[in-house]
Image (cartoon, rainbow, N blue to C red; front, side):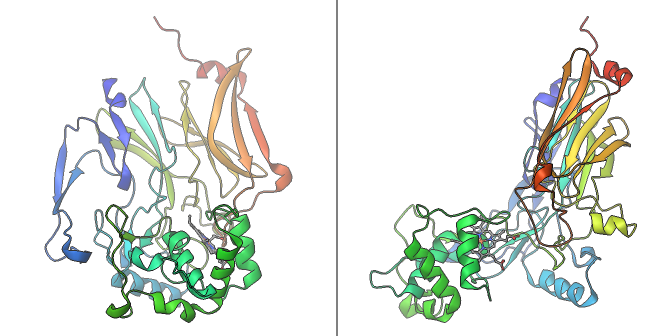
Length: 401
Ligand code: HEC
């Protein structure tokens, strides 16, 4: 049944979906859980929900599932945060003024090229990440820059137009002006750099002034009093916006959900079942203490390649490792540390009868906390491994009859 592979796609929310789904159920929202949507809008009561194959990612963060590698006070605080948020699992709509938790998260699941298919065996290999994110909708009406705006008012408006989509409505606290200027112009981790074309110096200085004195931007906040609420935007302009990529991290930089943070898993597409799943890499400081079953965090742009000879090659960025797994069992057969953070999907090729696996590693990204082991700038480049000759032969596709 080779057809299955052609009709499969990885979908949002941690599901595999078939174009013609043979076994597709429906989920109904339970009464009373639908958050209030603004202006009398209603969320749709049902959503299509595949009942088979099982999802590859966790789809809900619960208070019992909080990351155990944080101290007791933080653990307690996170449990409160989770119980106060909208957190009814998949399809929970975002709402105005209250946090909604999304799991496996906006950068989680198989996002960014996380699958490899084997047409001979009709197996599908999925790299999955569990990293809850949160979003709170805000009104866009407050975002206009008035003609006679003070720098703080200008900053408030610009922040809402260009920064709040990721940062939420509240400006970051206690960041000094030089740091704001540097981060905005150079970017940092997931935050893109803003050129002077994208953000004028005048607008950046407005943001700096607003961060230093958020209250001075406040008279423009539409939500404070109805008397100052500006008219809604003209038709077709989005009225509400929320954050993208607002990952919920504990103070140590790990997700607020407990492990596994990433896994490699094998689906039998004929059976609609998960054949095996293994944690994908490690968080180096935890592994040094003997905690190795967690999976690495942030293999967000690493994807697997499966070969006809029975191997899966895949790198994990945050622990600077490249790995080879047995495609039938998920057993780790080989791994090697490299000097930078591997990115993307390896290239597998053959020259003169020898098989090679090439990985790219760079140092462009860095993150706070223990999840990310920073690569060395001089370690950037391509890492190419030749397979043992015998294995190389085994890797070659059998000639078509
Ligand atoms: C695409 C999402 C995104 C956008 C848009 C964005 N940021 Fe960020 N910003 C981030 C993320 C994520 C971080 C944290 C980076 C890290 O992990 O080090 C960050 C960090 C920062 C920091 C550093 C905070 C600290 O304590 O180190 C500042 C300052 C900042 N952003 C300001 C801005 C401003 C001003 C804008 C708008 C002009 C903006 N950001 C737009 C995602 C974004």
